[in-house]
Image 1 (cartoon, rainbow, N blue to C red):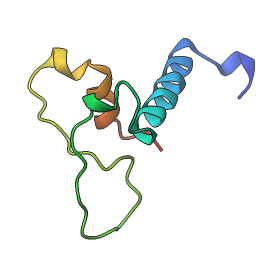
Image 2: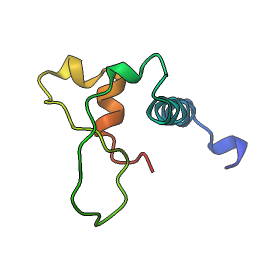
Image 3: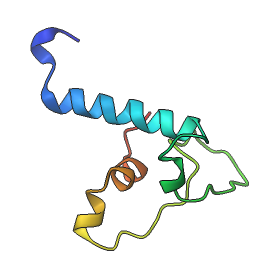
Length: 77
């Protein structure tokens, strides 16, 4: 990626991705308790971005929460 193509949004998205992978990879992380329970999959058709249950989307404000954004993000990996 060249310097001219780096945007503030891409820097933020990269930082979000790094934080989320650190949280999900470390059960002792302070924010790990904010994650929903993991789901058991009986089959593996494709690689998933995470194995957590998706909480209900109840409001626009809740959708702006970091955990909700990352859990529902389709471009994590």
